[in-house]
Length: 492
Picture 1 (tube, rainbow, N blue to C red):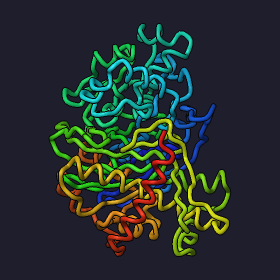
Picture 2 (cartoon, rainbow, N blue to C red; picture 1 turned 90 degrees about the vertical axis):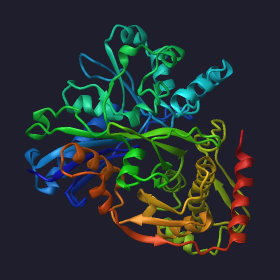
Picture 3 (cartoon, rainbow, N blue to C red; picture 1 turned 90 degrees about the horizontal axis):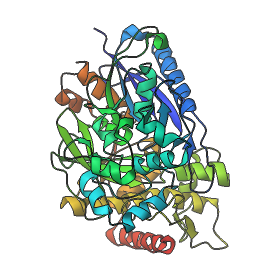
């Protein structure tokens, strides 16, 4: 029996695919960026066809690089940017509009309406989420309100809704499977995370017909098989999870209290809380980690702009040519010269949930140069992570001993050392940084019996580098107090 798993990792700015062997090593990979669409300030869209074509292309390329055909793959695991919302025609598979991306703020007024009507406690209790434009439910409601004929067609059963995992599964299976998993369903604002089902009262509050919705299947289980025409033979799809839950699984955070932080477009910290869904009192989210089929819950803090601030320095300010340039710039100055950068380009996420906040550079002087700005941008990623960690420790009632890290910016040694310093806890970077794809592979491989169980997966986790805090407590607190003052200046 083949021992290879194909992981499809559909992210916010690129699609990638990685073939993993049984040891959790990459045997072949490919990645392709696709266009970001900004129709107006605060709005973010993707072309679903660009997502599909890029994901299919990199899947085929990864197999080619691994020297494998479809028959050499035991199963496919799918992981995806969460909350991004697509509606398509069941008859043709054609989207009725561009995908509304998780970063998009167009539904903030609808969230305000629901909050004013006193509905937030209901949403919070059932879903573990706050009423924010981040989540899929209000995006779906917006499409039904604003695309001509959409609501009537949805009620008639002609349309299908999905987050990106569901859309990809539909396309991969030739329209035979319309399904998601509990981790993605728990991010929609319309799924009761305690009962494990779509919630009719929440659907009614957003005026969403149930006929639109996918089936919810275990994260490690049967999601059909690919159309044989795509890869030359049918490949079983056996694992699905939202990107942050997949990364938590890939980091082997299987024990209660283990936590990871992913440095991607945003930053996302998740802590395993086991079978207990802990309601947050400090601005975090209660979410489903995975269903195997037993449900594991997590506390999550979502920072909207993490690595994207480095992209902004590169693409908009053009003060760097490559993301990696930021490390040398940060190291070239002793400090930021009092500069703080709050990258609230699309509002502030956890623990503030301020949709109206906007980004700012503060503390600028005539002596400020691009090195100070680049260093302040990296420091902002670390400070936002501390904001989330403090809230998480307060909710969990216990201090964190170590933080496992992954994602693109975790390769930056200067940032990881500063992260350990500003947190005052050990930061552990794994040997395999592509933990999101690896988590999807593990979920698929468990269902395909490539791995015997979670103990075998846990035994594969290895630290590549451990960053111990070196900063004194007084300096740590003084720097963080300056950050808090900068954040307060941009709060709406």
